[in-house]
Image (cartoon, rainbow, N blue to C red; front, side, top):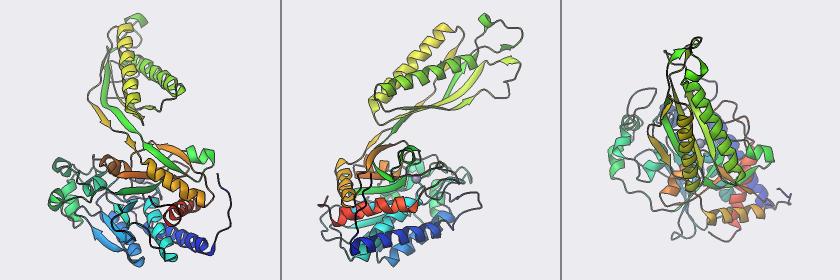
Length: 429
Ligand SMILES: [Zn+2]
């Protein structure tokens, strides 16, 4: 909900600085991309480094102290009044998926720079240091490793992960870091910064805020996941015209039974007030041995379940296994093999920081709602390293990770104004 309040001269000046910084930064950074459609800046590529150079240039214009860690993450510090206060790190990433959008990542860096620009415009010295943070390699489509830059900054990247190969070049993460002038060996010896606070503005990447007509919302948790990446069903290959119904062990029918059962279970769990998503993202019955005239004797699939709550994931997994037992019992000849299970832990975000941003928002006449994050973000890496972390989601539309990804600069500017008000007017964190 937004109430229009008359702005003071200082607030006007801050809003103008915010709007101008966001607009200019997005224009500059989005001029950097491989060929379209959309924007492509692979992790640890020259294009990502060029985008980082733009952020560094903007930070220099704001008079910030620049440093980089051995993985190439950028930190640009504005000194606060009290050096004993934990600093507020704020930012996001500038790499993109292939043919991605104009805002995923970029908006968070633009918002962080704009926040400092607003403080500078009014010559406000914040209570704590503010560190504009531009991470590397957040999109896990390039290397099969999550949150590379932020985990590197936090001392949590492993030597084995440095050997992961980039999907397009086949070269290792460590080699790509060296190509861009960074030092993976030094990184393994580095001491991470003391746990502090991390704030990330990010587009929602989902339709909720657009549907409810809210410009931004405070994120209370980032969903964790429970996944089966290499599951399969086996049955019996047979002739489609010659095999009677009661003699079949059809992998496609068994799979359909499982998909529909899980869709029902998902609906039941939602109705019980639980947070859950259930997605069979890949179902493969189109291998070289599958054919129109054959009853499928095998099928591969992936299952991705997400929730803000570990117990809910456990409960959904138990129901999933019960359904498999039922299907195997009811359909002789059918066997499921789930392969390995992988997990990511849900991240609980900081209530203290959420309350603080909420107080800032009230100063400018907003009452932001709360929302869950379905996707993973750098803020999850900071939270799991023991930092107090918070995300603010900005309304977006036409999807994300695609060229059509839409966002209104005014919505991001409004969220930055709320945080600016928290820093300059609300009681300190
Ligand atoms: Zn992102």
